[in-house]
Image (cartoon, rainbow over all chains, first blue to last red; front, side, top):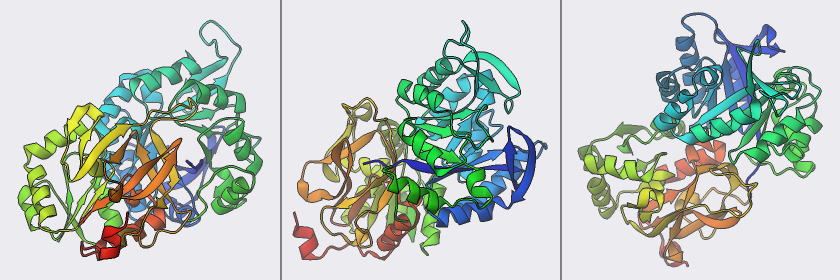
Length: 259
Length: 213
């Protein structure tokens, strides 16, 4: 039987690790290569790097980080942030990324998903969605709206419709990131995650809001997510990857327990 | 020299890096002449069977690979590289190399909650021993990403199985050829150990292993 996955997300700015709270006020918390190695050794199932570098040489810096991580971490490695072209995607793949996360650029130009899927395979294209809870309306009948640019720009697009469109265009996986829950440590947005997980036939990764181990258990059972993404829970040493997996395992969630 | 066959089928450097980690210095090449000189071959790959076969044929790699197999060179197929070793794939209705008699089929799942591709970590259960699987322990999980799975015609070719709704073959072999559906290069310590076992394998099987059903 397939295990649920524990995924850690490392936000990288200028080659250093950062953690955002509600997408503002980022602060450095260490070296991404060291952190990646630490989590790998402690049983993490998959790693995501999100590049939030603003400078013009961002791509070179990120490629360098990915290369170094790929030399010593032998689990799937996913990279997102600022991917606008197939070339960006293939460069990151060559550097050692298994999967590519597209987000804002795909909202602005959906063909990017199909182009990346064609170039590197559907299973390696992850559609990452930042989602805001809104009142149900004609434009957003699901009650969830797509936002971009780190949560700053509302797009007037329905999140459920976009998830289905992303799947149709060739995305192999979805990251469902709740802007409302992100950084709160009060739990994932269960309703949103379950709605999307039930609607698509590709794996769904829940993101945003994890603060306690029971939040992960909840989103992987009730929320029907295939994977749970964590960040601050493990970055500041409050919890360990092995500890979280042990908790989930004890609570009946199928996890990979030997590594 | 260990050779990783390059036929435009994805992320070869991750395989190369994992080999380096276990002390196996592997070269990546798309030349048939390099395949002919190799004393160990890794045949990786993600992508689609149809385009992969065309790419192999365009470079004469299909023939070079079969010649290397006949010469007794240890060969490890991974994911699509393994699938191509069977005789036919449902993917693009492709005739493949035929090192192992059998077919590659698409998952047809009854449970609508199960996702395709089968992506993530799953337990690999040994059916019988093989030198490449020597370090695999009960409960060990490997990383899978695939929508198609191998169905060898002969039970004797099946070395390990995994379950995704139903049970399928996830490691197969014949003589000096061995193939895995999962990705050892992405499977952490257990994957690296498998690669180390392949690096140490001379391509022969003891009579007990060879004749076990």
